[in-house]
Image (cartoon, rainbow, N blue to C red; front, side, top):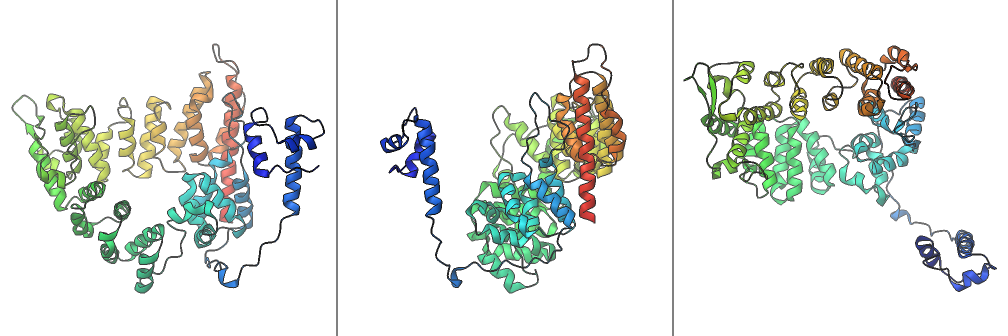
Amino acid sequence: MTTTTSWDDLVTCALLGTERRAPGADVMAAAGGKDASEALLDAAALHTVRRRAGLLPAPAVPAAARPEPAPHDPRPPVPEAARRRLAQLLADRSGPSQGGGRRGAAPDLTELLPQWLAAANERGYRAPASLLPALLDTARARTDLRPQALAFAGPRGLWLARLNPEWRFARRGASAGAALPAPEDADAVRRLWDEGLFAERVALLGAVRAHDPQAALTLLSSTWATERAEDRLMFLDSLRTGLSDGDEAFLEQALTDRSRNVRATAAELLSALPWSALAGRMADRAASCISLDRTGPAAVISVEAPHECDAGMQRDGVVPHPPAGRGERSWWLGQLVEAAPLRVWPARLGGRTPDEIIALPVADEWRDELHAAWCRAAVRQRDAAWSRALLGPPATPPASLAERSQLLSTLTADERAAWVADFIAAHGLSEAFQLLGVCAVPWAEPLGRAVVDALDIARDAGSYPWSFSGVMGLAERCLHPDEATRLEVLTAIPDEPEGASPGAGGYWSEAFQRLVATLRFRATMHAELAS
């Protein structure tokens, strides 16, 4: 059988389908009466053999054109059992669903890979060289894995990524993939700052800042005027880590930047410094809008929102134009209160504590606007006392769960866990998913117990477990592995109560079997990394 139709023509025919594009006459003639689809496959098989048999070896690459050797990675290798576990996690391509809402009883390995990488990075291991290609392929497909995967891949991973265009994301976004010079090596630091990739420069700035904050600002200032606007924004955003009063002068200069986004970020960072000049200016503006009215039988917070957004306010980061559906004056007021240091309010409002201030009535229906701005200020300034006051007791009806989750992030891990556990006991799981996401992993014992008890109650109610699949997925990743033994009793198929959904007990049993299996898998995984 011989044909003159090219390989590209065969591919085009296959993509379009033989009904829309018939193979060439030579293909059909050589097929001996077969239909078009069989003729196409025969011709493709022939071309495949011909292409492989006729492949010529590439010419030898001159020594000067060969890539430089991979850099040394001084980190210790992962234990052998952990290496095999990583290979298993990287090779898993199974989807979690079995159809009809069912996920089966086996652990979802794709959801455990982030934990494995985080634990390996915490212990300072280097990636096995043989698994670097699979690791980079996985990071290319999953953007959520990239920071941890690139940190684990280290300098060898970045070296390898330079040799494959499909891994170019690593060169753009690796913050830990490059071998950085010692912060005190001024010449090497300067050379990488002037010549390095953007990701390398961001990582370098962070390393120098951790060693000598003033040296980092000097380095950044030396090229600030020539940087692209998007790069200036990223460099400025990196100052959030270790933000201090020493950054104020640089940030004040950035308030006059030609980029609106850079100006807004500089203003936000300055407002997070309670004693900065910008925070003082915002405090004066906000205090002029809010006072205590004692003319009635009880004290009331009085609000007089700004009547204009002047040039000084705009320079300090107040956005003059509100989003659609929002009034201008309330929009300006919210920004002023959000940026004002919270320390101003006890003195302004009669020496009251945050709890007492939050309990005060607010005139003219300004309460929601004022409290929302205080919530944003408490999160920005990481003020736990105000966050507790604004959160209120867990048993109170849930208001904005997004606000509550942000406020919780300012509290200690144990306090967060205890508050969310009490919230679940009062309101159940349906309202708690967003709050669970801000709790430290593994969940502290009271929180883990509250989640399991709520799942047990949902199971006894006789409904299907699918409406709780999000919480169940979180539990698989976040429950302490020691909970597996206590959960074993829930893997049995319960007696179905009257009115229960048909077969719900079996589905719940399967879900708890998967939860127990996942917790034990995680325990083994961490033990292997610790060996």
